[in-house]
Length: 52
Image (cartoon, rainbow, N blue to C red; front, side, top):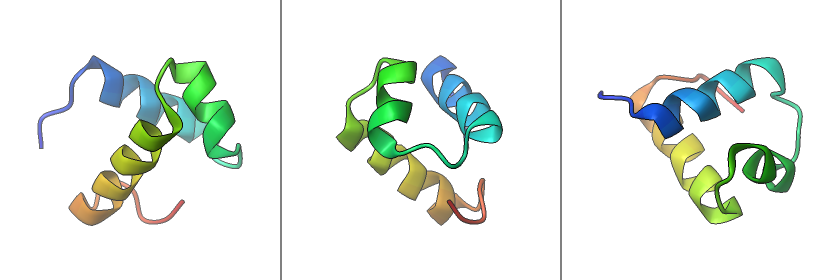
């Protein structure tokens, strides 16, 4: 799986702030809430993260 800069930024934020709501994660990473939700589901499907 190839990670772009947005993926790296989101994963880093999740590593440090995994209990934040999706809307706050989206605001911090300059993404929409839908994009954050889609990427997190993609990471779970690929096995990059276990659970969120």
